[in-house]
Image 1 (cartoon, rainbow, N blue to C red):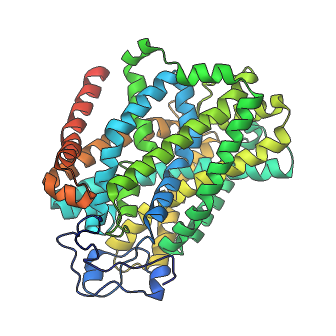
Image 2 (image 1 turned 90 degrees about the vertical axis):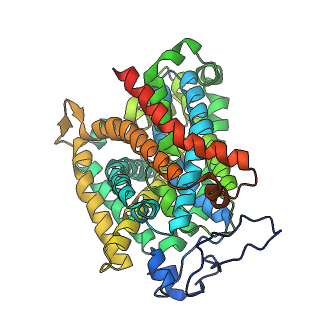
Amino acid sequence: MSESMASEGPGAEGQGTGRPPAFEHEHVSRPRQRHAQAETAVSDVSRTAAEQGEQPYTVWSSERAFVLSVSAAGVGLGNLWRFPTMVGENGGAVFLLCYVLAVSLFAVPFAALEIAAGRLAHGSTISSFQRMGRRLVVIGLAVVLLTLIIDSYYFVVTGWTLGYALESSLGAVPDFLTFTGGYASASYFLVTCVLVAGVLFFGVSGIESFARIMMPALMAAIVGLAIFALATGDAGRTAAFLFMPDFAKLGDDSVWRAAFGQAFYSLTIGQGYLITYGSYLPQRVNVARSVLSIASVNSIVAVLAGLAIFPLVFAAGLDPAGGSALAFTTLPKAFDHNGFGNLLAPVFFWLFFLAAFSSCIGGAKVIVAAVREQVTAVGSRLAVVLSLGAIALLGLPSALSYSKLDWRIDGVPVLDFVDRTIGTNAVITVALVGTCALAWANPSDHWQRQLGLRSRWLADALVWSGRAAPPLILAAGFLQLT
């Protein structure tokens, strides 16, 4: 195995080292070893196979690599495409306030439980839930199915970013109606599927290498764009829109539902990312600290995306509530109005594509891990082919809904319909049900060890938030809807 894929031996956390205590069940019949195959073919290894010595564990090389990889999976379309859209449609600052509360009080503890559960089971999302209780396997299956559906339209929008990046680099930014008037949407969607498959052929090491390069580049680019937009756009109106909430709107339940959906969406809760990536987490890594780092990176990128987009939108006199096509119709007009369209558009859309592409990798990895583990006769690379094939097949209706065929459901393009129904409602429901099940599966002292927490009361508070908050949130949502 390469240097970036260091292996971990059981019991590596000695007393007094400051590292989280070792898992009680972490003994394996054969120690984890360096193994050349683990870098590529062994990208998804079940705990049973490792314990029987059939295949070695594959792990992230460090906590930093894990944080970068998980952050890369979340900051893509979740923060650069969907977050500005949700902010624009839900009142700006009041939505941001609700989002921050949802992330701080609920998303962070929920994410910690998912990562710890993945490391505990060292398997796919399905086996992680199954390990907590046989009946919970249904939740694992639901999570994988939900992620497959989300991937199906997520890849389509990523294809748009690739098309815009290429065409804006070669000439002018395409008109959205013209771009989606033929079959470009479907073509770039299929290209995206092939590119994701290429990265996943290299397993965890491929994901880690991509994240190490992409995340620092993304952060530098988004900061630069935000500074430029604030300097040349309408910074005053943007500040009021993003940071001066109308508290009267806090009583609007639709804003809260959108904020919770975005919080879970951007931190990839309830979608299997955290469980799958957590299954490759070394014992020495502190889960609680990692989750705080991941949430911080995601939230910072989300706010920076708003600061990079809305000053230009307001300066051009455009509507911030542009919907899912905000980045593809409103922003090009804002770039042209600014006078730097030829320079800004290629930079923005290449940044957009790389961030979105990293999210596609994470989403596809959830599917690949489940197929690789559940279908024992399937090899690692065949699992990649089958998984990406399923995403391509399921995503074609969304891709063709933005083509000259104009496929719609109830008068709405298929992609928008799926995003509004699955991207918010289903994500919230599955995330809450899954978190509650995980929190009740083990006692607080068990989760305290898994999370690496020294404080018993903090562990109790985190676990009980996972036990009590989901049913309360679901009940509140039900009452408001009725």
